[in-house]
Image (tube, rainbow, N blue to C red; front, side):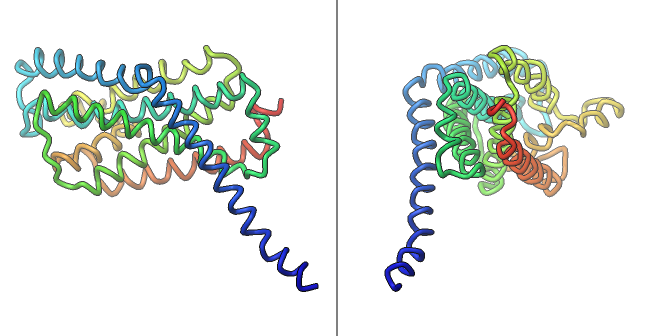
Length: 270
């Protein structure tokens, strides 16, 4: 009797260990994938952002002049870093999870003892890793062109992590419903890129007409970029509290939706 009781008491611990190993395996696989093909996952963003700095910051910045009391190149640097973070977080998860669907090895996850929330967390952590690695690379590139002074490090870290998680979850949802590789690229091309460009990366919304400002405030990326910029420069076009509320709310909402869809088998058991 005592043996059965001890076995029952030990069972949750063993299940927790199994789940931890499963989560760690997903994250390790994602990390190794990112590092193994770093010329495709990290380097392109660093090169692209260097071109942005050279063209927009160097050639056009002198004509634009100061922005919110800062040099133009210094002003756009946080926005370019944040743009790289959200694009890469999204792209990593959508390509990785869709690849798992296409290669049929997602079925191994479905029959494993891993709950849906843990599978989603593993892929989101992989997207977070890539987003932050690319963010660090782009930050290093930006320091070649301008100075960045950290005013609020916790705000920088919080904005980067919440934004990366939000877009990683968005990539996961895209991968769930994608039926071919073309559908994997639709959202980044026709939704994510325009929202980034109109999200205040290259300008302050205070320069826009009133009607354009009103429209801009419906763009969630505007709040993410401004929160991140506030951490560096101490200036923002929006309330930082509102920005973090939007980022946190979006991350939680998308996480719940992803779990519900996984439980239903949407896009993976059809």
